[in-house]
Image (tube, rainbow, N blue to C red; front, side, top):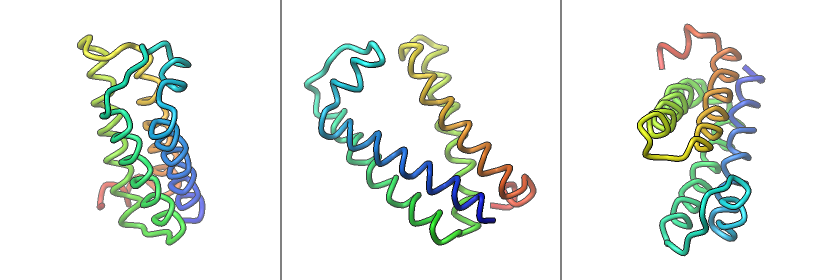
Length: 122
């Protein structure tokens, strides 16, 4: 169980770092991934949402909530599927699949640490 908690906590820290970057200096991150700069407010709103979600993940990992960790596996796999679909259908640039891969890898880590059976019960 401790490894599952750690996996969720690490993912939360990733979300906080990603969200803070999008909130404060979005064009730096966009430039790294070859995405055109933007002045749209939505990217900063997404950053704020990611920071808030990251906090929830950190607390869920620290508390080792089995229910939260199981539910997070399914939700992160769902986000990965959406990101892959957006790339597949040409709505998003291929580099967006990198973020889907991180989500899927982190979800797999948590699922493995919990045991697949527990995830299916969540």
